[in-house]
Amino acid sequence: MVEQKTNAMRILDKAKIGYEPIFYECDEFVDAVSASEHSGTPPELTYKTIIVQGKSERYYAVVVPSEKEIDLKKAAKAVGEKSVEPIHVKDINRITGYVRGGCSPLGIKRRCDVIIDASIMKYEQIFISGGRLGCSLRLDPKDLVRVSSATVEDVVL
Image (cartoon, rainbow, N blue to C red):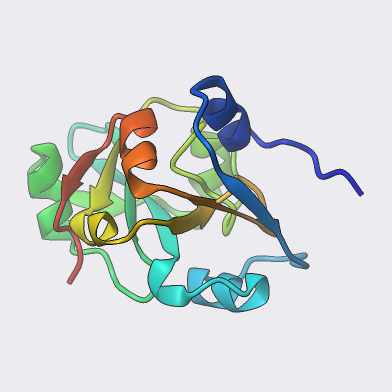
């Protein structure tokens, strides 16, 4: 069975960045830790994407370890905002083009700056959402930072 490419995969292909797609059974939202269990990927190497909005009304994609929580004060400071708040679940698809649980930091519909937690740089390979439920991507974190033009900061509690 050939799996369909996602926007995230197309972006990596266009940038000539190597990655490995990992497909697993998933019909509905599961959190990042559960997704890592379903896909057989280590939870400590699995990163989730949280979309936040600043007081300026700009959107930001914040990538943090699956087992950690975002520190909204640190995230706001990293993007130069007074404060940021996660967007409402009902707005995820409208803003990102992705569904809840399948949001990748790559290929987001609306312009979003990407901020990645600094912990990512201690690994040679990490896993992010592939852009749909049941799909993760394994890639080099340095490649993710480069292709997403991300800022790397400590943004977890």
